[in-house]
Image (tube, each protein chain N blue to C red):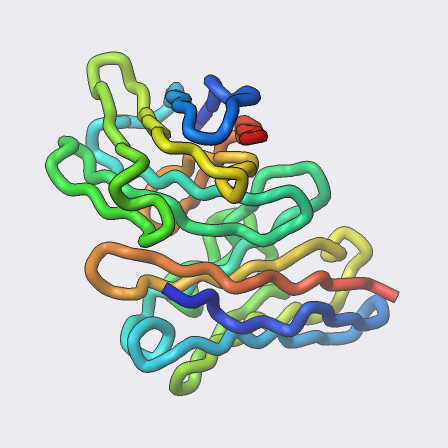
Amino acid sequence: QSALTQPPSASGSPGQSVTISCTGTSSDVGAYNYVCWYQQHPGKAPKLMMYEVTKRPSGVPDRFSGSKSGNTASLTVSGLQAEDEADYYCSSYAGSGTYVFGGGTKLTVL
Amino acid sequence: EVQLVESGGGSVQPGGSLRLSCAASGFTFSTYWMHWVRQAPGKGLVWVSRMNGDGTTTTYADSVRGRFTISRDNAKRTLYLQMNGLRDEDTAVYYCARSDWRDYWGQGTLVTVS
């Protein structure tokens, strides 16, 4: 149950696009289309932003999109806005009823 | 409105025990998988445990297996996490979350082991 690998930080200017990667293995990200992404603002609970790789929950702006290739999943935020500044975590099903999170990426809107 | 409210956190010495509760409302609790996820101060999210709707299936992270026990009382709409043999590294905010996508989260309860 090793953590998924995310870059510690990412940044972009308002209006730009930024992509956050999430690298796992053939036993988790590569094996299942059960990747989720969460947004967490300081002192707040995480919020689901993407599930099953590409599906957006109701209320999540379509500026957020997800994808996966092999053992790496990605979250793209287009048209960056100030309120997008937060920590982002990926998570994947890892088999046998277990799950694993990434280490988190701090997104800064410049 | 879906609500999850955790309670039971606090300070405990190494080796001690604590039971966390997560009171659910606004949805049919008995039909959902429920999860516990923790976050050490200044660190990332870590999955802890999961239980199915009728309480017959549970799984645990390697780091807590054998020490923590997840359970639920569907009549009380409450999820529990019994934590025994607590270690310094168990210090964290513990969140309960609904469903295998963890689409709703509580506000968390802080457990400090020292």
